[in-house]
Image 1 (tube, rainbow, N blue to C red):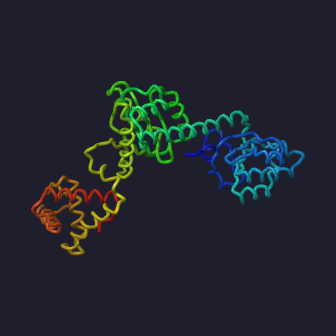
Image 2: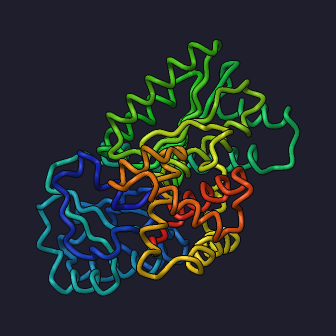
Image 3: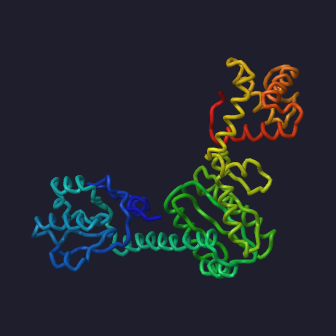
Length: 384
């Protein structure tokens, strides 16, 4: 959830930036940006003027006549766990000696040289935009977590939703997205769009991106979500997307849970888009795929078949069951797909029925077989 120096430097205004030293520390968190164009002294350190997460800008002018002062300066930034130092002029760049670079490399302290003649104000405005967005994201994520998991009333959930977006409309749906924007500028534009949008919300965290879309009419919201899906395809690389069903806004917690569950299913099944379907068995099984019960179920199925089938035929029989399930239990289609005689497919299916002791219970057999096949896919287990 924290904004890193690395993320900030991806912005186009920093195209000329060069990491002079401390490359391994480029992921440091940035909490604020400050100008530091005055000599470092003990008074500054004693007042605790410097703090962890500070990113500084300098032109190095203060070291023009006191070149050795750069050592105290850099060591002070390192000691206070500052995020890094941006040098925005090449007039005094020779002050950054190989010794200084070695200190920064050893301490993984980023030293960035910006070749372009950028005004301080432009740099600070850009960095502050990232910081403010991340702070807002943090607040909004905490609020959404409270809506989803807090023991609060519907009225309290509505109050929280209105605190995020006061003009949210009657109906809403959530869209959860996994994937990265094509560029940092695209993401900033997206943030700006949703901040100025009266009815929709955009929130990002370390796991996914959340869009809360709203409209006054069901049909209008459906068209709106279709448009957003098209935009996601355009601006996010290789997205995996989960849609909730459409709800009245009082059911915001249901919409959030469904969007999240749909995204998990889309990622597991390697699907680009997945809309929540309460009758989807695969969707029901996704939260269970890493449980011991799921692994026990599949192992029990395989072991039962293994007891009745020779080792050399086991994989072929299991593959037949998968093809049979994929083709809705149609013997003829399964035989065609596998280039086998239909009677061979029937024989193998009956063999597995016998192995599972379900010869007289077709419903239970088909249910067990379908769940076992789906679990294998979800758990990414190899066919024996």
